[in-house]
Structure formats: structure tokens, C-alpha cells
Length: 112
Image (tube, rainbow, N blue to C red; front, side, top):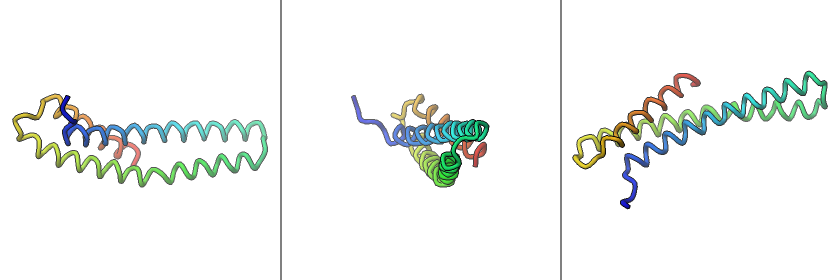
């Protein structure tokens, strides 16, 4: 089995970062639900404060993560331009790369 091409590596990087971003959004929603539940039940103020701090820290991750996604998408676009002209680039790799580029930009537009 041949090693993965630079195009598939760049595609995988974008896909991984988009999944990571979605994971942080799920974590954020879960944290907000925990805080709301704790506030409704009048739980320990210290615990509520800790959960709110965790939410703030999660929010701080997004700008850096969005920069990483942008960088990975730009790199993938460049790699795709280089590989499109090569005769041995499989069409399915090109299709996956285009889908990853679209997904990356949609993620940035939606949440950035």
C-alpha cells in the first residue's frame, strides 16, 4: 500500500480540525446545561463558578482553532491546485479535498 499523498494528508487535517471544532461546541453546550442545572438547584456557588470558568476557557479556544482551520484550508487549496494537474491524482481524492475545503469554510462562516 503506497503512503498517503500530500493531498490526502492535507484533507485529513482539515477534516480533523472541523471535527475538533464541532466537539468543542458540543462540550460548550454540555457545560452550559450543567451551569443551568446547578443554578436551578441552587447548588454550591463554588461549583457554579468553576463551571462558568470552564465555559470561558472553552470560548477562548475558538479563535486559535479557527486560525488553524483557515491555515489548513489554505494549505489544502494550494495542495489541490498543485495536484489537480498531476495525471495520477485519483478523482476521489480531489472530490474529498473539495468537500473538506467547503466544510472548513462553512465552519468558519458559521461560527467565526
